[in-house]
Structures are given as structure tokens and as C-alpha cells.
Amino acid sequence: MRFAVIGAGNTGKAVTAYLKKEGQEVVLYCRNAQLAQQLCQGLTAQGAVEGKFEVKATSDLAEAVRGAQVILVQTVASGHAPVAQALKGLLEPGQIILIFNGNWGAAEFAAILGQEAKEKGVAICETGAQLFLCASPSPVSVDVKTIKQGIALACTEASRTGEVIETLKEAFPQLTAGKNVVDTSLNGSNPVVHGPIATFNITRLENGEDYTLFGTALPQKTVEYIEHIDAERCAVAQAVGVEGISVLDILNSFWPDKKASVYGALKENKAYEATPGPKSLKHRYLDEDLPYGLVPLVRLGDIYGVDTPYLDALIRVLGMYLGRDYLKEGPAVENFNFKELLG
Image (tube, one colour):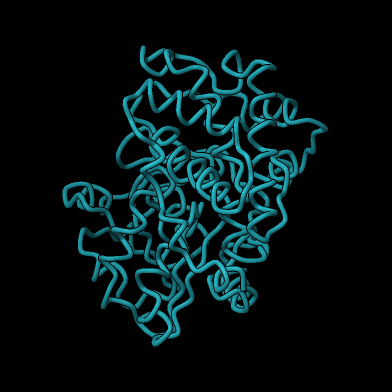
């Protein structure tokens, strides 16, 4: 099967190495032509995926997606809409577009590419989490720390979810069926975990300090705040029309070793124990998890009449500290067709 991977960051390189090891054909797209040339000399992976792989990389999006059966979108959430716009006119009949770690990516793609996708029978889908924990020691290498045992996938046309999972099962046996893309976007663990940790450790980020994310940066009180905003997330999900799955159940679904508490799931998981904390205010916890993960919960809470005081406080205080109006950022969830997305 031929895959086009859009985005050559940590996860884009991780999924490229993973697919190459699985014997799949991959074309890796990155905007930087110089980096594309470097990657064509080989991509080195270590950890859960080992080896040096020959890679076809390009800075030409049309070249990357031409003939691909599956287009994997591995950009940050703010890149979803621009990628969807850039794909206009490039789609081919029967392709699958899969946005890893959705954050409303499938809904944004459907809003931009919906008519063309329907005419060409293109399935648009997303996952509720990222498959890999990984880092990039250099521009042409990736450290795949671990691979999750299961993550949910759903299509904007919910009836196609089973078909897509069946098509991808050889390459991605970890995929399980989510109910719909509202479910996969609302039932994600990253925003509710990363948001409070980033907020209550903001000076560590600003000072560029070395620390472990789930070590001293995560005391009991921070875990309790995570549980408060998670309860609000679940209430919003229920009001919108999907089951709110607790962050503990989501975290336990990723790994074989189940924990009895959120504190244990984060503090006692070997996959997380060496995870470094962010060392800059320019980080996806602030640029992605806040505007694309937490802000939509507040907006949907306003629409559906759900109080979100813990979310409101975190978003407003962090926004005031950073001089950002987070409530004006992120996806326009108020414009999404929830009746259609819910299937």
C-alpha cells in the first residue's frame, strides 16, 4: 500500500520509519526543500522501531499525494486547515485521508474538502490520539520511544469507519472503531493533561528548565485539577451527544498495564517516566492543546449550556499571562454540522 505522509516533524518521521519497517511504500512531504533532500539520504530510527530507511521525501505536495491510497496528516492542529486548502484539486478517487490525533481535524477537512471528497469517494477520518511517543534527536533521525496498543479512529461518514479500519489493519492493527469524529475529538487525553501541567509550570517553560513532565511537575494538586477539567469535558461531550470517556479510561486504553487512578496512570507508567517537560513558551501544549483541545470545550459548553469554571479559569489566566486571547483561537466549532458529524 502507498502512503503519503504530510509533515516531517517528530510523528511524521516516526510513522514513516514504522511504515517502511512494515514494508509499505511511503512518500514523505515537508515544506522545507532542503530537509526533504536530507531525508532522501536516509532516515534513522531507534527505540520501538530500529533501522536506517531509504525515504522518498519531497516538498511538492502534488507529487506526494499522487497515487497514494492513504494520506496521513501528521502536522500540528493549526496546520490542518492549511493542508486541507492545499489539497483542493489534488484528491484522487477512493483515497483515505487520516488525521492523526484529530483535534477537530476531520471536521475541518470535511468543511473545506467535503464536496470534492464526496464526489471522489474520499474517506476523511481522524484518530483520538497520537500512535507514537517520539522525539527527533536530529532532522534525519527519530527516537520512537513507544507505540500505543490501541487508539480510536472514526470517519466523518461514520458508516465508513469499519471499511477504513479493515483497509488499514495490516499496517495499523492498533486502530479501533470510534463512534464518530465528535467522539474522537472530544475524548482525547492530551489537552486535559497537558493544559494544567503547562499552566502550573509556566515559569519552568519560560526559563528553559530541565524537568520530567510527570515527575516533580505533576504533584497531586495538579492531578486534581486535571480531574476537574476532565469532568467538565465529559459533561460537554454528553451534552453534544457522545459518551464522555474519563481520562483514566482513555489512558488505560493505550497501555496493557492498567492503573486505578489518574495519578497512577501518569506517575507510574514506564512509557511516561522519562518524558521531558517543554522548555519553551513556543510549544504544542500552548499552541495546540489549549486552542484546539480546551477552547472548543468552553465554546461548546456555552452553546449547550454546560458550565466549565475550571476550564474558563485555566484558559483565561494562561492567556492573560501570555498575552493571548485563546478564546478567539482554534477551530470554529460553532460552524460545524454536528448532526452530520454525529452520524
